Image (cartoon, rainbow, N blue to C red; front, top):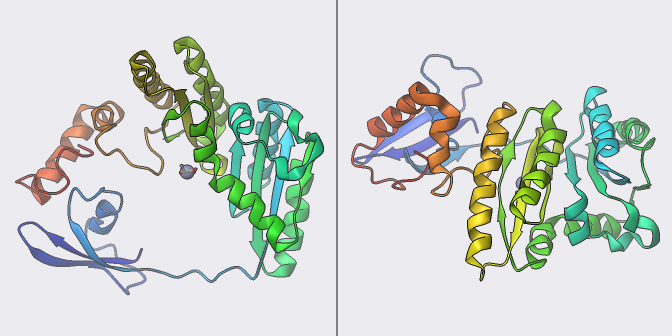
Length: 294
Ligand code: LAC
Ligand code: ZN
């Protein structure tokens, strides 16, 4: 996003950024609006820098016997400086909910999966794929590198269906969106399962390994109030875990109403005071998405 046109209360139009390639004159109000969840201004237009679609890409799906061998593979990709477009994972529980049956036969033994996409010019894609396979293969139980369009589409449809497949296990779930420093990924994934065990809830996670952003999920039956209570407790413990690992309560989904109480803990007293002060300055009457985020 290089620029925004926004309306701020009580009704003035502002342009923040735009076609300039460089500009450090002001506080970065544009970035402040991005991710503000509609609490500061109403965005009426945006200038976007368009990135050309890569000429080619290769999808790679690899399965591992356990968490540590899968994490080692992910760390090798990132540690080798391989710039892949996508680096995702599924843990044991997520794989159990959505086994990649489209692979046939032997995939049932995998307890961790890595899903990766290399892209670029055909030459770049070939070279990057080779390096990624070198990193992913040593510990792998299987490596799937589909080339036919419909085989590639099957893999991504499977990934897109994950949320529904996990929800279907018990009919309900509480799913969070914590993010941790990349080297704490394994602690966050194992910690999610441990929190679930402590509270008697099946737990799993999947997400954007390359970003350290994980969808920690606790499975519940919504007809059982004790499970809803346990899931709320689990989310609280999870946020505490994220903060103790140096992370954040939300990597991509935002804070909204549900997590608004936790932001103060993440920011500390002074940080939270600055936050509420910014909200007050933009929207003194609290008209924009009231009670969200702050
Ligand atoms: C995902 C959504 C939930 O990554 O962000 O599956
Ligand atoms: Zn996500």
